[in-house]
Image (cartoon, rainbow, N blue to C red; front, side):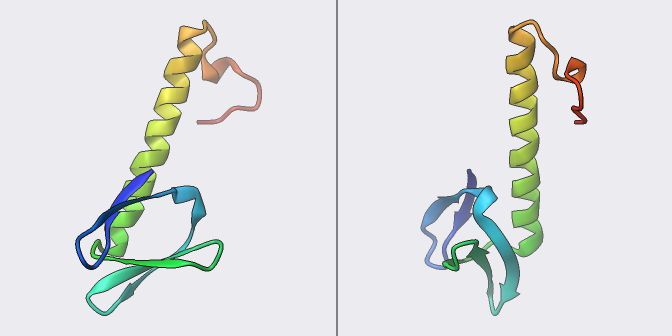
Length: 82
């Protein structure tokens, strides 16, 4: 999940897999989700992109860690490219 703040300062977590569009509007940013709902936040579009990238990287790192605990490195799996 990605932490963002609504225009009124309320903290919310968004599922980055549901983000379809991020666009600057007025003093904030509108995040449109795949179901058409939108959230206006105070973070700038590049900051949101950074958070999504960091979230996805963390998921890959954790998957690698979990796989190595089980004795199988992800790099050893066929057709896997990190």
